[in-house]
Length: 126
Image 1 (cartoon, rainbow, N blue to C red):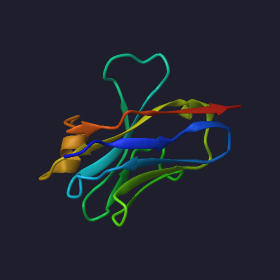
Image 2 (image 1 turned 45 degrees about the vertical axis):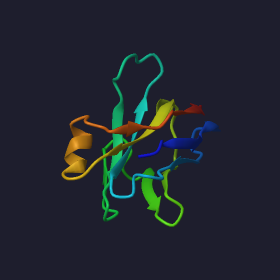
Image 3 (image 1 turned 90 degrees about the horizontal axis):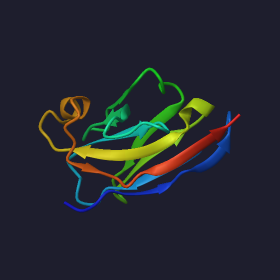
Image 4 (image 1 turned 180 degrees about the vertical axis):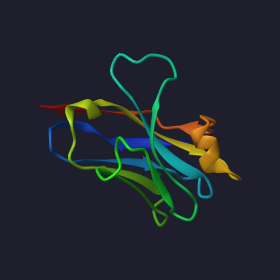
């Protein structure tokens, strides 16, 4: 497999939108996910936000459902996270991640990831 390379992030005011991207070349049949790590959190503690499987079926955690959208573009091997109605508490480092099949969504939820992006900082001001 290749690397997961993220782009996007930045600063926005509350209520605004941002989109993160994650280049996923080499992970065509993997399930993908977005996680975040809040400021001050250390170690490997990252909050799962959403997942998407090889059939483009998404799942969302309650904290972001209705505001964040996970999607994939197979033509350019890119995973996206569209973030709308951002809140100051969404401020965090955001990571894309991949898990191999089979049962890859279950693996993601169990924290068994095969690859991580390098992270992108999102800062939401009030």
